[in-house]
Image 1 (cartoon, rainbow, N blue to C red):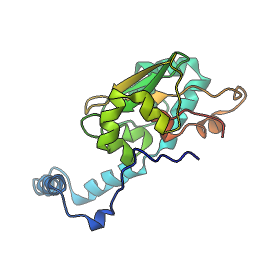
Image 2: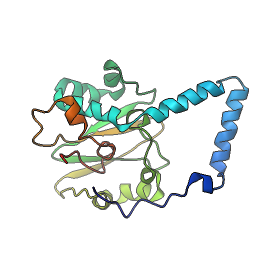
Image 3: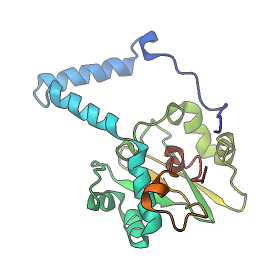
Image 4: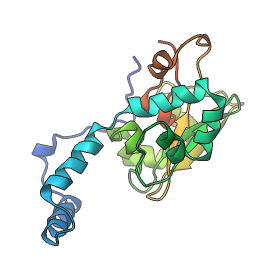
Length: 206
């Protein structure tokens, strides 16, 4: 297991920290939309529970399917939302773009403004993804940031940084590890991690 020592800021227990201005604003908006009848506490809770249920295994299965099926991979590259919908995976309304790692290009995802992230496919973003250090340094020195995650990319390989927004999210299709030619989708999906779909690590046989 790789230990990341450089860009994971200490996170205080949320119960030990005072409400921030953004937290108070979010609470006020929640109370307002309920008061206006736009939703109910029950529906709001159900939506939160649904989002909390999303996990990296959902995106991992898409990646594994793309490794096995070139036609599906192209559909995924054309439109993640449509390709996922065809096999019964709900990706929500925000467009998601797949970017494929190759022998010449390595992709990595960041959101420089906040923490836009394909939650419907890989769950909640890790704390380091939301940190100011990751958001600022990844666009300036991606190769160095990747090294801190234990991912060394050859100087001959171009690193492409994709900046997620509220209107477009990204997911990386990592390279399929060698020696997996005869593997089925379930076995392949276990090789795909959250970090490899963000681009800070690579899929590999443990």
